[in-house]
Length: 406
Image 1 (cartoon, helix red, strand yellow):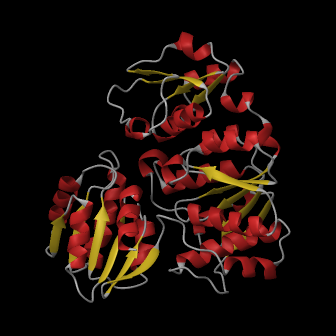
Image 2 (cartoon, one colour; image 1 turned 90 degrees about the vertical axis):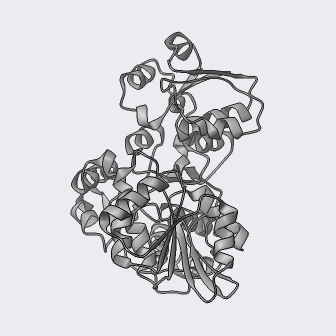
């Protein structure tokens, strides 16, 4: 079977990999001649069935296949509308997943942990559950989830839904319940304002049951958009995770699963055994240093961790060049004022831009740039009796550092 992939950002590349792994012939294209194809190029799969075109789209090849995946960033474009009209959009060809009871977990922070908590509870309760979604969040992408759900039998499907892909997910999946962890200041280059972001979540909820954070004033403004709004607060039972923010994630999972009929006592029992998801916030004791490590790629996520304790050293990964909205992390760090800020290339090497930004803020404490992971580890090893935080942007690199420290 022939399938086309239009757009080769993270989701498009992960979709291509998922399709090739299943033996499909894939025509994949992107009009950006400078697209970063690292994910696809570094994957060891057999690419003999891949027809790759960079710099243009061949519409004849796209329209002649059996199914087409359009990158979420292109979902509102004219090409996507035409593919839907022709009935070859991938979720209109593969439709079995739409019959599964589906929970979408969205919001600025806490999506991955909350999704895995819900999965952990439902699986321990004896249900067949499939989980996946947001390619940028560490999962294998929406296409991998769709294909897996169409290949097997499941009682529940859990989708981590990026706030930039709400319209795409609303079309591709038949969502029954929406969990929203919070609304924070991230991806403002896409949302334009916190008010517009809030409106988008309200539209996404669209008269469905919704599990919402009672501590988030923006979510409270749109709770009437839900046919059955249920509010979560702070989990009051035993949890083997760092951070007060995880108590809110746990309560979101508790309220969701209680709505699905799981008794509270079972939920509490199951969450006692829940462990931190790889790449998310974890505490490590390393050579007399206390280290907290985890992806905190926006200012609200960073605040949630740093307000828990005072760290001597903050090791922070940089965002992509175009993600200027994430530079407000540095505004917060100036006020937090650790003894040392260590900057490393996270998603892209924008270390120079980060140093310049700190200079413009008039930051006067120590700032180091360390570009190599092994050198970061040597730096940490040289410290004694310090509290060190490792985070920011660049989940893959943060995970590598964390794994080596463990």
